[in-house]
Image 1 (spheres, protein in one colour):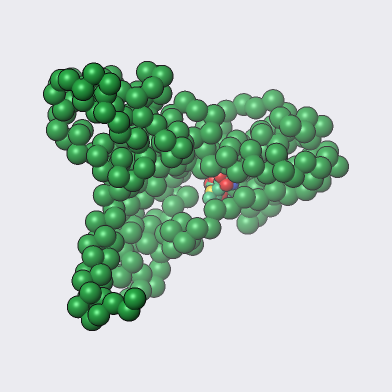
Image 2: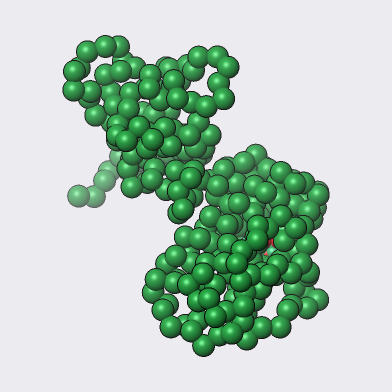
Length: 271
Ligand SMILES: C[S@@+](CC[C@H](N)C(=O)[O-])C[C@H]1O[C@@H](n2cnc3c(N)ncnc32)[C@H](O)[C@@H]1O
């Protein structure tokens, strides 16, 4: 049925409210990861109460604010990040009458899981990477790159001079590399079979090439990235790390692998 003009205006207003406050979802997700709520629920082996979550939050010197935690959990339940169910005994105060469980979404936020998005979430929602989003109108008016307007230099230069950002960024990239490689390697079975060597250009700390070499041990893997990135890369069997600038030269190998994430947000901020 066609909406009348007043209903359309009301719906339009509702959309603006929704978009205006949509950042709250990302911030609540960040809060859940920072407090390790998915890990707390997971280690308990099933749904837990607010009091149980609060008592397991790491690194707290004061007792957590249950009503604040309650509001955040209710928002995340609305977004299907957690489930909420009444506790079986039904007694007690609000902090123990509802039990919160994991969903298919929050399972992606377990910090120690092999396949996790937690490091990427902490990277994307960090103030260092959130601040450039405030520069969109300046980018339109003046041109240029939001990250550089915010931080005064390009992202790779910033990372080379800020170890904390370097780690935050590399960890975020490494967790997605694992997820993507997991999917590639399970489907693209024969694609790497003919290779004796492979160089991952812009390979970060080597997570992607190490996964390829693990399932194709005949490949001599080379992880190539900027010197400040490979300097922090862990050792992987069958993989050598080489630092350099891909615009100058890249190491020789039978094939080049490049996985570059060009989502709208990333390209807008850095490219
Ligand atoms: C978007 S990240 C992608 C990382 C990884 N390939 C992945 O998909 O998870 C881009 C990578 O390119 C690297 N990079 C940027 N400029 C480079 C250059 N001139 N030479 C070599 N690597 C570079 C960065 O340090 C970063 O690790």
